[in-house]
Image (tube, rainbow, N blue to C red; front, side, top):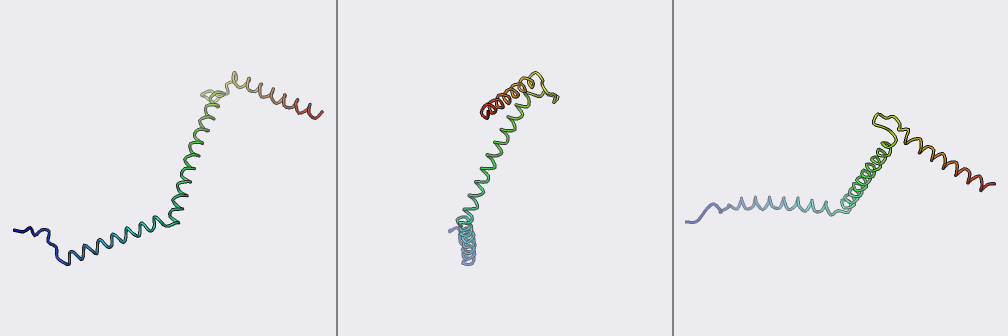
Length: 109
């Protein structure tokens, strides 16, 4: 006795062919969009912008951490300046400015 569960009518076969043609047309349309030059350029631009944003974000975080670390050296937890660290740095800065001014004055004179 033959198994009749695999037997399809011509109408079923035609409907299956129509459905597969529609799926194939959708796939071809999608491929056409993906390989279109505007799509390729747009994807490349988006990737570059994403990479730049990621790099800038990492740089911002690194700089922010560095600034926070330096600030922590000169300010205590309550926000008050640490005079034992601020005064020596200020004296060195004043000394450097003085040396630069003296050097500039010697070049002119």
